[in-house]
Length: 302
Image 1 (spheres, rainbow, N blue to C red):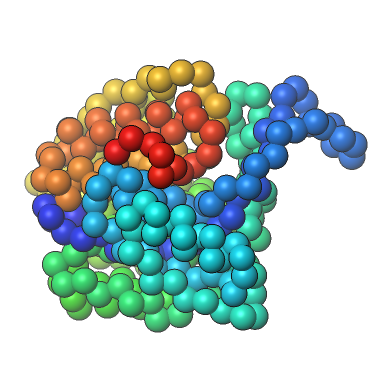
Image 2 (image 1 turned 90 degrees about the horizontal axis):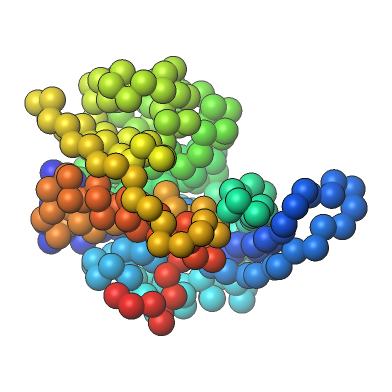
């Protein structure tokens, strides 16, 4: 079972500041397009940690920021949600930043500058009996890759369960499926979208993806978008739930996958079985799509 009931969850990976630009109509390339711009804390791994804290799970976040105002704000935002932070602070790179373009349908295009994230080194992830969740971005970037690999090894040595979210299909394809799969070999749980599954397994067929990934990982969670989500576990166990309806119009899909991962991990740490954990994950992901920004705020109800 990943994670075990009551286990603390350590999240390792990227922490960013998102510059979100929302615009209507067509983007006027080479000219001006009116937009609403906001600055918000982000990063796939940090978003997952934020939602875990919001959901009441014991969460530890390990990442790397610059010695700047954005880095300090990133740490404060996580601490305010109950997350324990183990941030490495560097002076030779700024905190990572991502420009997020959000169109009228809520679809987003991201332009990331990794900043300090690739300088992550020797993260203190060991929590005996706990669970380590690694953002794929950590493994995809050559600078932070050794830290991600070392963290997975340290977690196994400490008796922790492990999970990886590949994070993004395009950089995954650029790295190559064989290289990435070698890095995550033996990880207990992999959470993938169909786009990521197609890169890793050469197919979008859920059954074939589950059989392929399940041969090297004890559990596989497939995020199927409008079709909901599926879990494949030991001895051929399968659970599937339909997608949840957003509580309002889709505003911004940024962070929905991060919230899904957090809700799944929190539910499993609470002892919920896979169908209930999938349902909780789909509901939170849908709720995130109907709000602005990828994170909960301190004022949100728990």
